Length: 409
Image (cartoon, rainbow, N blue to C red; front, side, top):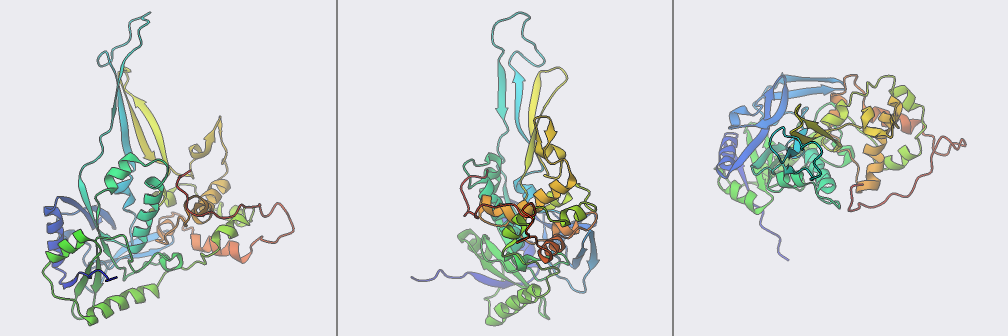
């Protein structure tokens, strides 16, 4: 069977402006990296001038700052506090409105036996087409994980499905990992492998250029509108070399192969008591995580009782309300909440969805206000594992791991 033709080109950095124009002309709202409030964030951009040209980020546990590079790199940074999740699963979303049928603020007549009528209006789904520019490989894996959870289960999330349906993804091969990145350990980067319409590889030698390769038919159409030349073997070699160098410069590493079983064997490990002395249970790690998907629903009403609204907001397993049942929280202690997060992210996520819940982006490490490093915590548990301990309370029995299932329960 003949292999499909690879559509690729080599373009100058100025062609990024053309790319944005082409996407906007096709009806897309372009969201890409830009500098704001001392960080590189993802927001709507109107042109290439808004990209973080010549900027890089320096990241360590609990620390993030921007610095000027010595070149004009367009994608010379790792990842910031934002993830693409905020554009697919908004932090706060109105689900529906309810109005009394008798008019605003009306009340049923006193003593009336007639059923009061209510008008229920579901929030319309968004119709704007969106293009994501500058998506890293770890982030593509995060989007794929959320797709599996919110689209591949027994119940599809209506709003997520509408936002995700026509997203154009212009990915970028990572050549500048951060000090907290460990995508190589999680097998999620730095090279982009799938899930994109086109992928950019920035080459920062004496001849600053970008190798552009299409991944879909519509991606090929866009590549065809960029003024460039045919790619040569030297271009492909230089692009691969940049990614290989990035893979060799990961800021963190973790042994990921058996984490599910390791954590199941160490539910009573003393490390949980040690880490909770530092953890603020603030939930920052879950808010910046590109795969966390927990939400809460709240009903609010006006003072006259004529209208009510239902809103969905991001929720965190670090909050007491997250496990509130029948008059109390079943995870009242910070130790239990941190353990729930770590064991789910790296362990029982496999049972639910067939993969790890971590893509190695390092955001949870960088944006933890006290600098808790998950790779350090996992290594500490591994170094003094309770597996095989004669004390039966030190390791709980576990069921066998399952393959990915259809429901997200």
